[in-house]
Image 1 (cartoon, one colour):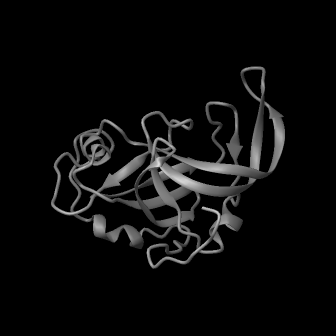
Image 2 (cartoon, rainbow, N blue to C red):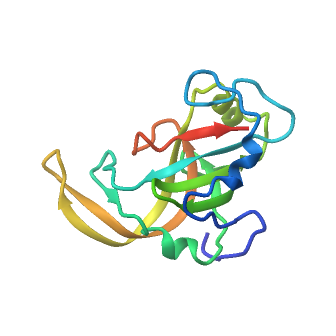
Image 3 (spheres, rainbow, N blue to C red):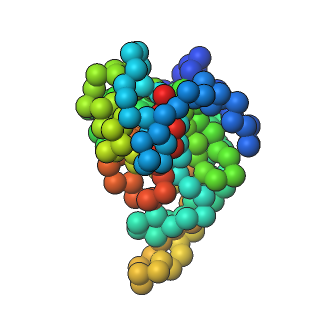
Length: 176
């Protein structure tokens, strides 16, 4: 993570551009947010939001639009971890960008036979999250009487598939 390198898998998505998701045209649903219930041969690919703008997370932090702009501008490839554990890499982020809603990702699991793939395909895990360092923020009072932050500049370190995202709306919404 300390060194940046270019990857043919990282592409920039323009705002409101869903064309990068066009290969998800044969999705099946299981009634739980568009998760595909059956496994196809090959790898498992998914799309979703790792962060949402303007929505306070479980500790009272809120992300401003543009907070990831600096991090995404250099073409860094981000790993995909299981539950934020760097000892458990499970795939790679193929595309990542900010749009009006938040930080949108398209990622591919390394193995369609992994526990992560099984849980994702069965709809038992659908949370997304990201590891970061706050480079710029303002402290603000949170609803629970503590202090939160408005995150304005984020150094992105990784994206994770998680059971319980700190931001409940940060979810996988398409699986191929």
